[in-house]
Image (cartoon, rainbow, N blue to C red):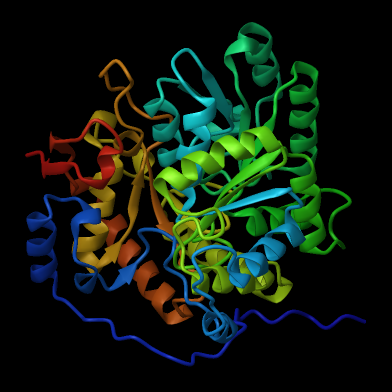
Length: 460
């Protein structure tokens, strides 16, 4: 007879080293955010109590990762640390060519500089911000083809990150010569951290084969996606997560990776692929911009830490804790009457800001309004994922995004349950005042990736 599960979620680790959080007052926070032109990215981190801006590079490395750093070999070329890193990547993703880079957007830029260009079109379930920017920077068009349920915050579809197969087939039939590759993002960050099923990936592979197109993965949250497959997809429930990851990788011709997510590094990433000619072209670009192919902008010690992190990322006890603790936050917000995107994703909870602030026009950025309010009320820094982030169209016009969300991204192994309970309380206060929150307007913005540096002011 199996033992009943306990209600309490415990962290599968002990805390070895701590860093202080500087407490602030509401008056101080109002002054800080005004000085930052109401852009959460422009705040000093010391002025943030709980930082849920991103889960990218913000996790806590393990004892064994810090120990691995001591093994780092800093030889310029042919470092043993590179081969340790390469072998750890191949253990899960069996691609012939593994090219390290300093983070995921570098892998995207290198690949798109070779495959992109004016007149090209790159389909994805949903491009994330840097992916879209790197596609469009070459003059190519980024097209999102997520299933309809992926655009509905209330839908309970278990795999809302799935690619719309009919739409992909139609696009490749109509514009095949213009498509250099097909991308699938796992999990689908822009769509709420939603997973892609193994069945959907197999079907995407079949469509790519039918039209003779390579399939690439934006795989920075591969372990979380594999855990959802194990939990939700028929026939996968007793499998090891690492084996599911290998099945995912076997369906692709290559991948880009920000290793600042699931591999639990503070920096790093890679581009991996099988095509030797394409790999050579990408290495040529790498040498121009990142570094020699066996370090790619990283120190040997970073490569060692990532190799260890890859082993820890697929451990079941860790993933069970990770997914369950994120769901704990999302379920508490729903109980407080705060609309969130369902089902709860793996790395973050997404508040449906458009539903929470129906009085704020989408072009007055309800997501930005919610994010600013969370900081002012409790020092919680979050990130708008919506009309601000997705920016203007290439012709300079602006239209509302499919959804206006606020992402509460939970760093890996960083905060305890009491921290999350505090975040829940801050959100409860937000819900009480939501009807009074103002819209915002942009007073200055760059041409690309405007959410990082744009300046805002509240509307009267």
